[in-house]
Amino acid sequence: MENDFLPVSRSDMQRRGWDELDVILITGDAYVDHPAYGVALIGRVLESRGYRVGVIAQPDWRSAEDFKRLGRPRLFFGITSGNVDSMVANHTANKRPRQRDDYAPGGKAGQRPDRALIVYANRVRQAFTNVPVVIGGMEASMRRLAHYDYWDNRVRRSIIFDARADILVYGMGETQTVEVARRLSDGEPVDRLDHIPGTAVIRKDPAFLNEFVTIPSCEAVAGDNDQFNQAFQMFYREQNPVAARPVVQAHGDRYVVIYPPPIPSSPAELDAIYELNYQRVWHPLYDAAGGVPGLETVRHSLVTHRGCSGECNFCSLYFHQGRMVQSRSADSIVAEAQRLARDPAFRGTITDMGGPTANLYGADCPRWAKRGFCRNKRCMAPQTCPSLDPGYDRSLPMYRRIREIPGVKHAFIGSGFRHDLFGGSQADACLEELCRFHVSGQMKVAPEHIADPVLDAMGKPRKETYDAFVNRFNRVNQRLPSRRYLVNYFISAHPGSTLKDALEMALYLIQRGMHPEQVQDFIPLPLTLSGAMYHTEKNPITGQRMHVAKTFRERKMQRALVQYRNPSNRQLIRDALKELKAEHLTSLFFKAAAGKLSQRSGGAGGGKAGRSGSKPAPPVDTAGRRTGKSGKTARTRRRR
Image (cartoon, rainbow, N blue to C red; front, side):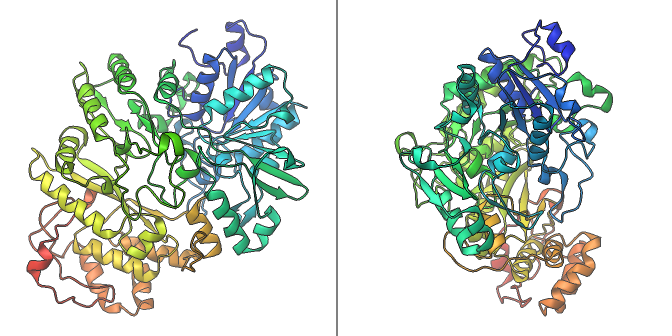
């Protein structure tokens, strides 16, 4: 039984000699016993502490019957919508139903309901009375406060109220969930589970807290954008695990009490989590459907660290994993790579060694251990702080050890890199080693935009930082046995981006022969700074008013300008250029779309857009005017 899946049926329980489970985990994902899946992590950690754990994956939510299949748990039901928010999983940025779900068997969409966390929790309440309900995962993390919901286009209350849950666990959740299980097992009532870092609860009166921060109420933020931004800013500043205070927000005559984030896990604690007995495959129940597509990208991968000090405004990581990087020990990661190499299904390629940001393994700051991160200063924007150590003296030796493991032919880094971390005198050597041994043809980076005001709104480094990286990348490329290319990720229609900004980005791409496929329509995710910008049309930190593309027409035009090679975008491009009074650029766009413009030579094209010619297109500004710069000057700036 040591290497078996967690029980998913009564027969599985009987096989183990169990007539009752301590904890039942419900998930909107298929059950994949791999450390990249949240339920697998939580389940294995609880199991390692001696608890009997079962899994109900993608239950039929149309009635309460399927929620009874494993009986009533002794301690609690733990509920998550899955690895992503169910509204993101089910709907596109244009609010259309997605046709595929990589976390479901066979990639079939429609296997989880909208607002799955709420639906599942309320079905459990129908199936069993007086059973403790614990909610967690990304959907719980990012909706723990009154928040703007893009799909409803309104402010919704904290999800703990709609789910009628007893306690909400946010973040990665292992330590909190174990503590909840321990206290319930010791006989503590579920309505007394207070002071657990990384959790939120509902209380009638927060006066029992010694110190706390009261933010504007749910009703206030729902009716007033300035109150919304004030609440967001106050909450945003209470995320330092070392110094944060509980945050309290009234919802009618009750309060949601959000305890500070947990202290980041130590290397030894992370090692213990990732060294548990994961099967690293989907449950055999899904074989007939062809398995679970989402596993394929991570099956032979290694999670090396958590957290990201980048703190991009559109990203959920700040409120979920935090901005203090937590890294496993090199010995533990190498040992996991050795186990992978012994797997009969392993074919010699580790597909990824990384975390939220690939090149932050081992990153550290002298402040983090005792004081946490800076209150009014970011680690990496507008420039990277000199106190931030990106950890290359720890990551590169570890990668070399993994390359030497018998059976490992390739050890790639498939996660995205922060291009602004390649600076200083040693950057060329570091980048060359990574490209030579650990980049499989294409290196993923995320400039996100080109217009500096938009980059400022995103919390990203400015264009000059990206251009400097591209020059460095091209220089390193000349020393490699085969060329590497950049896959550049961009976001269209982010708050602060006007149609003119989208045109500026499009012209930048055209001049460099880039036609990116990796363009994401901005989605205002709940509890992100960019989501607050979208809702209020102001920056909640500075109060500055900003343009927000809220109509689908403008959002589509911004994306069409950037993806100018897509034939279906031709009319949208005409419409955008007409609105900008730049119709004279139409022929430039369509020639570029047809590949009839000469491009710059050398360098780092954007994936399939990496073809180059011998001559650059004429430099133009956002109004379509020639800049007057000579061809010689233009050619000194290598294209990506």
